[in-house]
Length: 331
Image (cartoon, rainbow, N blue to C red; front, top):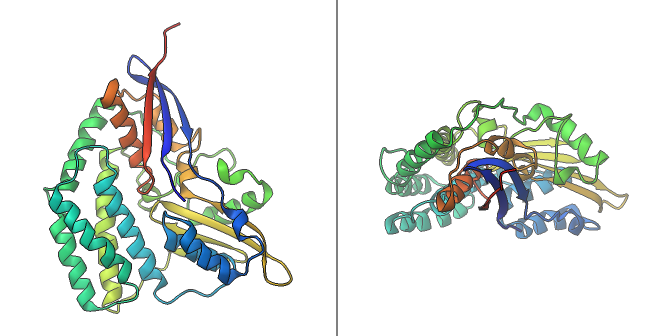
């Protein structure tokens, strides 16, 4: 289940005055009703095209099933795969070079296999493939994206804003609100807060809009690859990817903190189910993206469209955004 975010930016003299966001998300929670935890977990892995491992893990944890073997490794592999795929294929800009596409086509199947074929040889193969892609070097596709982001950020004159990040300390408040309000998942907010989740929250990136976020994304990909290699070599795993509670779970997916909440009946079948996706926090109608976009000097035409889409890109590494720009008439 996926689709493109539709972003309508209304401008005056090239400066964004209003932003309207239409999310493609359809709440799939109802399909879990009446199913056993095992059935729901298997279904989640097939139902979601974005971060299916994170969704399946959240379903298992929320319904009380034990962790799967190599769960952490699988989540890290999925995070790296999603961020690499989006960085090469979804960044609004030049078409990736054929050699970069070839490297990506080698890396993605390797990351899918790694949880079941964990070995030092697999770690070496991953390291070599990432090196060919140019991750962490001062040239190639990632360096080009950082340069383009820096140029756009300078031109857009983005306003400073106070960062407010979703953290594990918010988990219980999120679950409480999720059960209290059926519509909470469509436009989540905590006590008037408009929090952000994802890479910026994980790295406490309070400053910077475009260029700093692109640089932070590359740094996180490098760190994730290193964590995968440590696991493949028998080292210890990060311990903060999955939070389990009584009837709920929070999973730190590639695009941010993903919440599932579940209630079981006396026969241990699901009687109610709720999900809050990371995208809904970041692209709340009055959320972090909208608040940063309003006031931005995006210009006009294709340049304006690209700048809005790049700004959306750094808020979510998995979902594609399509912008439409309209100029408002002066009063």
